[in-house]
Every structure is written in structure tokens, then in C-alpha cells.
Image 1: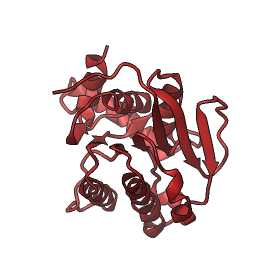
Image 2: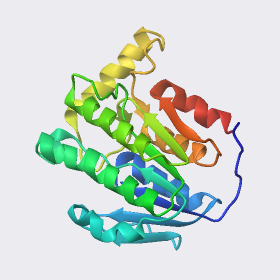
Image 3: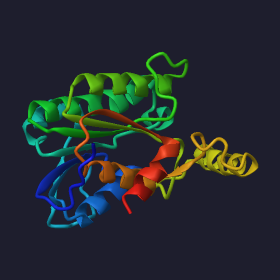
Length: 229
């Protein structure tokens, strides 16, 4: 049974506030009545100057030094990169797995009850593809931390305005939209999804008491948001 929470005095912890989904998440959290504070741990200072925001600029390689800061009510894990941007598979793993895992581990130790994680369509520890295999391993590890409530989102390719252009992703978005038109939505779980919609779905489910581990596939996210309106 879901119990809607309309207002509150919650503290959100946001990792990945400068990313495609994280930027939308931050804006929505600032505007949401349920949150009085948003703790953002980032590599560089944020432009958003809301008095709700507590911005800690850190070196993620020294995340252990900031463990005591990671406390609050709702944890939003929006950290992510690409192998190309990271420079190697090892560096990609460090960002997508290690940083997310450590953030969740410290949050759990500090009494955070709820975690929202961005994963990927096709995520599985047994996947033949490195990217989705890492995402699957992360899902499995976060689940084992046993938050009172864990929400795992598996979006397809994200659409939206990025700080830096990614030609291959832009081409994939065009192709994906074409496939969606040809199949009349028959492959909705594989077609691109707006990053803003993913952020809205994350914040929507964070306002419910829904115990245990909950998964949201890409083609379910729109209905999650629509149900709340």
C-alpha cells in the first residue's frame, strides 16, 4: 500500500547534481514542499544559489573523508558517466559503481531510510555488455544494503540538453525516435526518454511509503509521473 506524503521537513542528499538527470532533480527538489534542505556533494560549485541547498565541493576519490556528512532522509543517486568520458573501463567503474556504492553505504550507516538509484535498461550482473553489467552489479549491491525503501530506475537512452555534445548519443536518439514511430510504440522500453521525466519519477516515488526494493522500467516511468497528477 502506498501512502502519499504531501508535505514534510525532509533533507535530500543528491549525488550527480550537475548531470543530465541530476540537474532536473535539483531544481525539482528546491521547488518541492517536502524538502527543507538539499545536500549536494559535487566536484565543482553549483550555480543554483537556493537557500535550501548545502553544497559541499569534494574530491570523490576521498569520499570516505566526507562520510559523516551523508545523512538525511532521501538519497538520490544520479552519478554516471561514459567509458569515453571517463577514459577507461576502470575509471568508468570507479564513477558508476564505486562512488555510488560508497555514497549509499555511508547514507545507510547514517540512518537514511530511502534510496533512489538511476540504473539502466538491460542492467544485469550477467550481462554480456560491460556497461549494463556494471549497472546490474550496482543494483545488486545497493539492494543488499537493505534500506527501508529502495527505488531502482532503469531508463533507456536519456534525452535532454547536455553541457557537452555527444554525437553518438544524438544519432542514437534520432534513430530511437524513428524506431518508435515505425513500431508505433511497440519498443517503448528501448526508445529514448526525457531526463526531466526520469527526475520527476524519482521525486514522485520518494514521497510514498513503499517498503522494500522497487524497480521501474523505462516504459513505466511516464505512468509513475502521470499517476501522481
